[in-house]
Length: 441
Image (cartoon, rainbow, N blue to C red; front, side, top):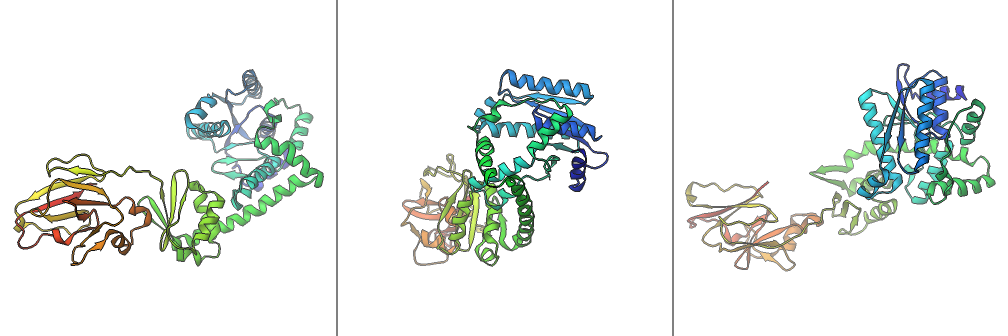
């Protein structure tokens, strides 16, 4: 197994000659065998052990085994005690996710502080097969079936060539001490159900199912890398960013044969499920207006674009403004100023400023969200126009319409804030003073 271990590392270019590796060792058979292989093959290593405080005395006994073995081997050891259940509760996540976040965060700290080339994790072929089946049931799409990479983001997995039975046989033949985690036999966890129930049944159909799943994961990984390359080449034709939003050109998507896979890669990271992506893909040929929600993001099927942005819940209120000098806290921050020397005043031609004939504007003003049926006379026009039609003409994205405010004087809209003033309230040659209103920030 030593030759296979070295061969796998060299074939996958996991370790350079002078690299020092941080080996994650739990005390279980996989990681203890990995440590033994690293040592017997002459690699320079240090060990990191996480005590997650989840199994009482057993957790402490695991740690003591790792301490004793590292001391005998003369290997530098780092240990860390985590209060995993407290962390999971504080962050509203599962114990498994909490343990993962804690250990990988700590591993990164150790790498950054001590300069280790990478962190070695003891995943094997069986882990790949189990992960593929779990992801298949969760509907994670093609990317979720690519298995576990031998090298990714500073993490290496040098045991991916081995079956779990090979690892256990090596431990027996070489007297490798290890601890059995009793929770590995409990089928309340999804991975354990797959390991003990699903894989066992599949092996009755084909004893080589684990190896076949592993091989398939390698083929799918190559396929996905090719798709990622094509997606990257087309991204510039499809995507553009405006502030904190991403615009996906519907025309660009429809012209790209793999647009569903493109959307899958783009959107799953924002919390959209593969089934959401399927619905989004179907919306490309439907009418505009549909909204798709993830936990922290939303996606709008607008006229020419899919628009992705944060899902921010806002409280839209109406606020009365008594005078230019008495301005309360507003949902849109505005500054008011009366301009007396109107003859020398030049009106800024920017959407964030509204300038009005101060004699025509009557306080108190009302700042409120626009309503269906609202109308005004847009600057430069004589006839009135519904605000809804004006927003359509201005091609305001659907989700932005909900955040549009109007400024009202004596029941009349004087400004669609940030867009257009009402022509009836414009400054003209007969005006003696102006009311200057500016959006702040």
